[in-house]
Structure formats: C-alpha cells, structure tokens
Length: 274
Image (tube, rainbow, N blue to C red):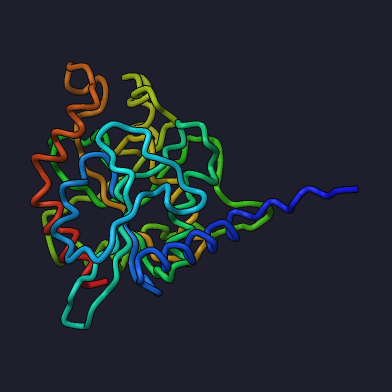
C-alpha cells in the first residue's frame, strides 16, 4: 500500500523558498522586504546596488506575474547606511487574490521574506483615493485597513492581534522624512473589477480613505510572522464616481511612472532608517 507524500505547510514551503533564495542570490540573510505594487516599479533603482535578480519562478511556490505593468522578478539590493549595510529583498510584483490561486499563494512572498530573515516589510500599492484634495501621484501612509476579501491567510485557531498592524514607529519615521505625508485607512476589495461608485461610497461610510485590491492579506501574514509592517499607497486615481471619468489600468501605471522619482527617494530614505 502506497501513501501519498505529505503536503508541506505554507510555512514549510516558505522555508524551502528562502533556502533556495539564499543559494541563488548568495545572500544568506535579508533584513527588510519590499513589495512593489502597481506604478511603483520605477522607484526600485533608487534603493541601492542590485546584487542579484532572479525570476519569481526560480523559487518554489511562486508563479509568474499575471498583471500588465508588473515584473515577475525578485531583486536583492545592498543598501549602505550610516548604521552599516542592509540587504533588501524586493518583490517587483505580487500575486493578487483575484488571480484565483488561493490566499496561501498571495502571502507566500511575505512568508518567504520572514523565513529569509526580514524583520520588517514595506507593502506598497496603487489605489483609488477618496479624500478630498488628494491627487494622482500622491503617496499616503496606511494607518489601518478593512479587509473585504472574506478570508484570512492564517491557518487554524491562531488568534493574531492586529492592533497597530501598520507600525506607528515606521509611520512616524516616514513623516520625519516627509512631513507632508497624509495617512488613511485602506479598504481591500476582491477585484479584479474596479469598485462601483456605490461601493466606493460604502467604503467611505465604513471609514475608508483608499480602495484597492491588495495588501491587507499580506499585512496580516506579516504580522503573524512577527514582522514590523509599513504600508504606503500611491493614489493613482480618484475612486469610482469621484472624478466623473472611467477608470483604466494604464492610468494607474502612468501615475506611478510620473511619481517614480519621489517614490524612490522616499523609500530609500525610509528603508535606511528602519
């Protein structure tokens, strides 16, 4: 009688991916992870010297990027700071919940980063903005979130505290770098369709200021793994119903390209202080 091989847990899969990452990059330990969302890709060059770049598919458990404007690459970057060198692990794309690959696939990069030694993670995204006065190309710190996906990445009866999920220490650090930064509550919808004007109004009534299709599940997994979390949204468009214009993905990417230098400078200075 034959027995099927035991299926590895998500945490075992992450440990396996981290071991392979160390082999391919030659970096035994990474310090800080970054996940770059829609529009953020041009900012990566400001972070420091790239010591290795691999395809996401080179690591077990990862799949190719499925969204236009996203790069299916992982870059290892060495950043020199007054406190010494840091190894940054930068995911140039993410797996979205709407791709239908399951929540474990969405948070696999986060768990891999934790297994690779990262104690902090910066989660970025492009999103719709609800607050009056916000304009496309404006970065906003995430102060809290509302998860409307109806799911969680946590397996079993593990009751993870999400109080102060988005680190007050790291947000304060960002404001030391740029005191003009605003904060807001991020609302994740499942996607991939954009929200209706009525759904945007609902998000606002619930206390949301930013609407998008990523980030919250990754943040929960990062907290479970013991990582300090910083979330930064790039307002790429006014949310549905606020501008009178239809939404399109190219607009999201263009807003990111036009804000790339500011985003790169902000990320570089903030990461140097973490």
